[in-house]
Length: 91
Length: 366
Image (cartoon, each protein chain N blue to C red):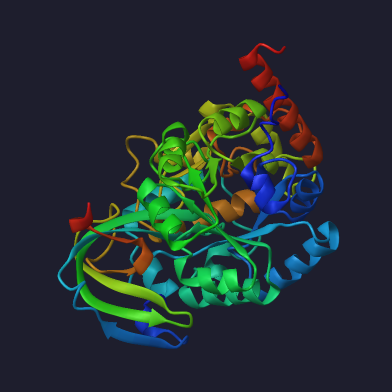
């Protein structure tokens, strides 16, 4: 249910050409059992695909080809909340 | 010339509070006590349903009247493609299951009495977060705190309702992004803090964030348990402090008495920063589980959420049977200074006295 494309909340997929192919970092994370906020860091390439989730829109970008991810993280794909994405070109 | 009261900061002016002390707690009674003592308190509601949050807001308002308070939620900032609980459990390697069975055997860990909380919980997704946020918008609570994840997308809606929004960050670039988005207060959390923290120490991140914060008040978090810490935070440029561990063992706290006793006995050396509970690094009190996963023969700790699934049954059993050797709690490095179980009101007043005494020491006004 986490995948924003498969949400019961109205979700509008789109494509942002300006973000496509950009290398970026994601200061990510979420909540663990017990209610603690847990930080996780990723770095990879944005495909440009996004989903605007609900209203006001909460934008999520798809990051692939992860070249940095939490130890043991399964797979090479993660959805990143837009305000937590930092383009490497901006560093 | 009369000296300015160092405890009267712009955070006090913004919130209409007497002391720049923010208590983060999961206990409503602590919120009521701290707010009524002249501080500010934030209730952590990340694990609660929208209905429970609405009921808690009503309860707090009945205790504090028009005084301000806050609600903290954890907004997800990244989400992996997801599996069902059964699919996740099936992916846990056999060797890890055997190691956990060894821990249970060596420490005589009983079976849990209650259903394992994590298995009931099911995780936080965007739908739940949005439903929680809708309650805060409907209730127009005074302050929303985003404990993780940027609140940028919801800022305008909250400001239009007269709410203030605080963002808690672990890196300076996150602070810059949130300040540019328009948060009202930025909370800079250092590595000394309880739970899942950022990688930078409190003494470094607070002045770093202050340097880029402009007029946005900065609040210092991480290891703050005394007035000396508050005085230091003010000197670093903070307009107040965010405190969590400090309230776990207070009189009003609903923490288990065994956990309170462990906290009172703990020194800063009794916390450990480990991935062994959730798969993500967090600072907690040492216990049998943390000791075992720190041994050289322990297998590699699994990533979230698999490690959480491994630890969930142990934690449930520890809490159900109230075994001091097994139980743990998130605790910051300032735990060493928590030595008696005081009422929350007394903690606020003691911290104020200690802060003023620290400033007097600095200026030679003893």
